[in-house]
Image 1 (tube, helix red, strand yellow):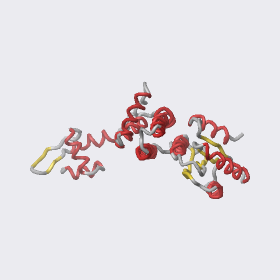
Image 2: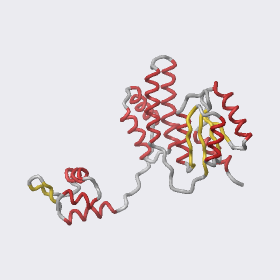
Image 3: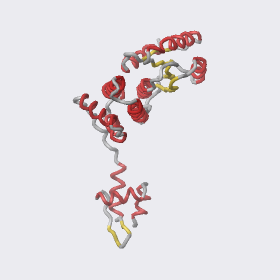
Image 4: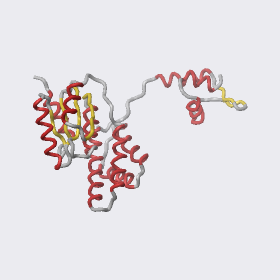
Length: 254
C-alpha cells in the first residue's frame, strides 16, 4: 500500500510516517515518486506502537551549580529555546517541580537580580530572563492523577510586582494535587474574597516578596479573616517544600 494509506492506519501525519521511513523505523520501497509499504511491515510497527512504553528513568542531578551556570548563560544571552529545553529535560526526567524551582530557578533568578542591582544587567535583560522562566514554568503545570486535595487561590498583594514566586507556588500546588487558581498581582481585597467564595477555595495563599507590600498583605489578611477564609503567606524566605507542608497541615481535617 502507499505510504499515505499506511500513515492513516498508523494514525499519524504523512510527514511523520515519511520521517519513520527515512529513519529506518518503517520499511518502504520507493517506486517512482511513491513509497509503498508492505502489509507485514506495517503490522509490525502498529504492534510495536501499541505496546506500553517503559516509564522514563528518574534523572539524578549530581551538581546543581553546573545546571545553574548553564541556565544562567542561556538566559543572559536570551537563548530561550535552549533555556526552556534544559528546564523541560529535568521535568521529563521526573525531577520534582519543587527541586527545579528551589535548586535551579530561584538561585539563577537571585543571581540575575543581583547583577541588575549592581548595574551589570539592564532592566530589559532582567525582564527577558524572567519572562523566559515564566513561560518555561507554564509548561510544567499539570495536575497528576488522583483525587484533588482541595481548591487554593494564589495571589500577590498590591505593591508587589514580583510574579514569579506566585507562579512557582501555583506550579508546586498543582503538582501536589491542589486545584489552583492563580490570580497574579494587584488584586483588590474585595475581588479576592469574591473569587475565593465563587470557586469554593479551601485556602488563599498570598506570596510576598517585596517588604514594602507587607502592610497591603496584612490588610488583605484581616479582610479574609472577617470572611472566615483561611489564608497563608508565602515568600520572603519561605521554601516551596515548607509552603506545601503548611498548606497540607492548615487544611488537614480532623
